[in-house]
Image (cartoon, rainbow, N blue to C red; front, side):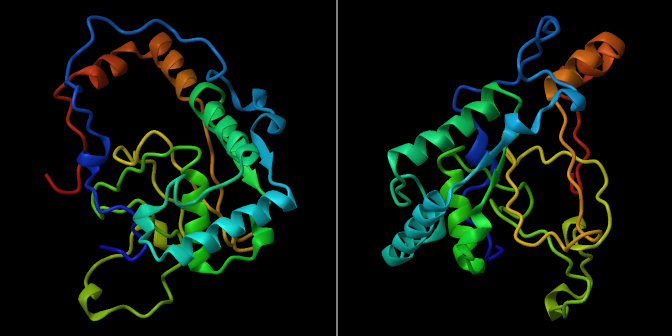
Length: 238
């Protein structure tokens, strides 16, 4: 298991509900409406950019120091072990509400002022996330809740990994479209170094509800296929 992993739980243990069942709906749900339906031109940065004040950054740093003093494993990071003030907790809870009931995207800015080292950055990232999405899920293959996106093409290759190719997140090339289907409902990215002007990658977000409505209007058979209980996923290993 990677040293970057936070949770020892498997993907199925992380996500499977005791009451979940595989069933096919009688019919497709009608077109959805609400704040989660949007096009790129309709998404205003003022809606999703949240700025942390210097005081709030100092508060997060204090929580990181407090967690380190507890000498707990990373998997123990939670609201209880990473306490923040009621005001900051409410601010992060508002971010959670926007992700679950609003546009579904949020950008938190200002944490770079804390000047965390790598270990502290992991603790701060997971600690802040525990106020936005408390339950962590795991990657389906590596059993990780956290992994680094970086250029590993110039790093020395361990003997045990000599014949193993690098994952798409470790090379300087655009990744193919894919689904991180076991990674949970919310994906979070902590940018430590974007590579500088002209060399960093780009991320694009889209409204899932908008996609659903478009498919319902133009390609409903695609949705019907995806709604089948035995619809086969494309897997690296069967």
